[in-house]
View 1 (spheres, helix red, strand yellow):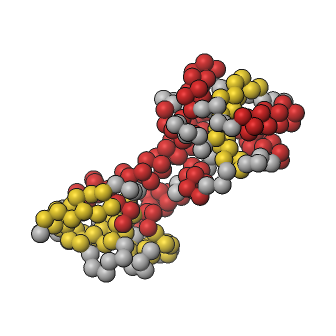
View 2 (cartoon, one colour):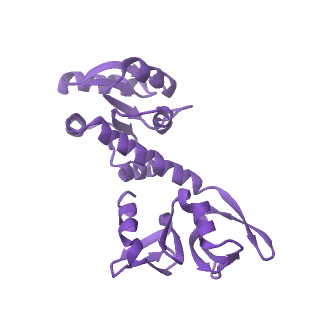
View 3 (cartoon, one colour):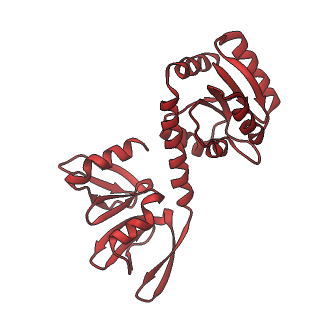
Length: 248
């Protein structure tokens, strides 16, 4: 497989290159890049089948490299030091990663797996990763929502769930016992929030998936939120909801 190594640390690039030469002869390293910009140029030049991609790099990190690729259909194996946020994103997308210092057996296992999966499968995994990163980015956004008294400012990640109330919606926030009643219908709130990590689990409820504590099975089932509140899942939306959280 034609491969690139992308890592801003020369020692890490050299060690990985040597390991691949000695123990993974099926890998042909075409270039070792020290930054994200060089990686993007090398991807165009070499059309690799596999990229070993460091996450923590200055200027353009590993995730941003993938975001800048128009059609990333190559296999990706991330290399990273422990980072909770990064690992959460990788678990979500089912992309492989190697923790530094890289273990030989884990390297060989990841390389073998990469050789067995198609570019289309990796394209789907990368798309899932980028969608997750976009949702998480939106969680820090601040919204100005209309209430009877004026505008109420709130951060997306502070919203636990929304409940329909006719022409208005009750918005439940973390660390607040009473909801904020905003002058939007629930469908209008869904339009605002659905690309920010929210899902309509019931005709009357819209939940922040990042604020779920657990899901309890049932006819439709119910979600227990971080604040202990229970939110019902309708039978009609249960299937789509379960598919959605399987990708988390």
